[in-house]
Length: 501
Ligand code: ZN
Image (cartoon, rainbow, N blue to C red; front, side):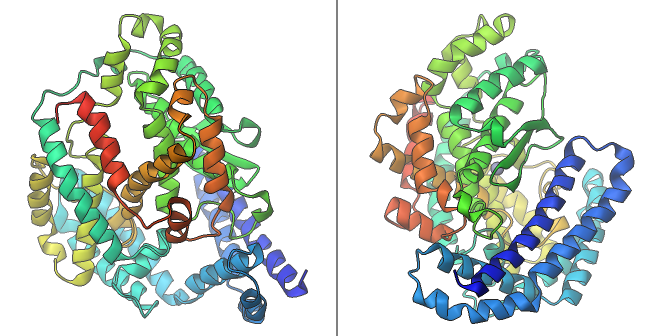
């Protein structure tokens, strides 16, 4: 092998390992660390982050990437070494184009902004954070300008999470989705909401754990290369292809909380466990974008885990686990309960159908703010108007409106939200392709068998890691660009049967 390529890999591995060590510390902090450890942990994490950044932005890596350009160009686009050089260059440029003085200023500002937001939200006081958000918007525009040549000012910011996805494409796709979704939501909300009281009896934690562990093992989550712990907010983290962990949080009076977050996080984790082991410790390991990542969590959580077929097999097992709580509840009642649709003010509490409206509202506001078509001052009013139009309800205050998400108050404006809805759209698109290849998948799911589906996802998506960008992967796997029809069909079919649409 080319000695320069070897040197590049060795340097990338050092940076990767420092990041992985930082991730272990973060995982520990969110799961088992006693509160007394927090000051030292913040310091330790900062040291590792600085060292990893120094390693990765070492000019020697830049020289190697330049020297390897002829090799890259001599190899086919699909070649793993070509992909490694290409993806490493993209990361290197992203991390070196922004001056560190700017970043230091920006981080200082977001830390202050976050602190002010934690006060402003409970006080329902938008005016308090308004000047901070105005400054954040300013920083976000400046950040985009470090990556000149964009078509839309949001594009470089979207690239941080969903590389290659353009604001113009997303706007077209999301507008089409919104036009189709709003009437579905309005027609569901005109009907009485489903009764989900059966999910709110008392479900002891140990039995919840035993049940969902059986489910995610059957999905294909490998406990030899992972584990599941408890944290205040569920997440997936990984330190190598051989160690991808998940967490859940339990609510004894809400059966759906741990159950569906376990399926969701297992979906994220199986994506990373399924990565080609040859990509270990390189920028090719791990998922390619937030949208594709989210498509895998949603696919297992919603298309499989909230499907009728799945529960025809698993519901009797669940009833055996909780005979006192669910013995008198029919499968149909349970199925309606776990698929209850009800417009709510809070994005993170939203169901499968209304969730996207929350996301698209935020996405559109991000674009309007960045374009200068909407001022921060007018944002709360714009929020109320749009919310009323899409959901048919009006937030009582800014606390549950424009102040609810941390994203804009502790980060940048732009690129923070599109991944969630992209994930939903892609989950149905990829699933449709899996069914086209293996029409027996739904029948297998109804027998509690998932190997065909898991195998197809592994061969077509998981194994590639970050080798292809999301648009490239979508084209390869689905034979066309991003499109919403499979997702609309999925929602109409499923919710058409549950509600009169
Ligand atoms: Zn997720």
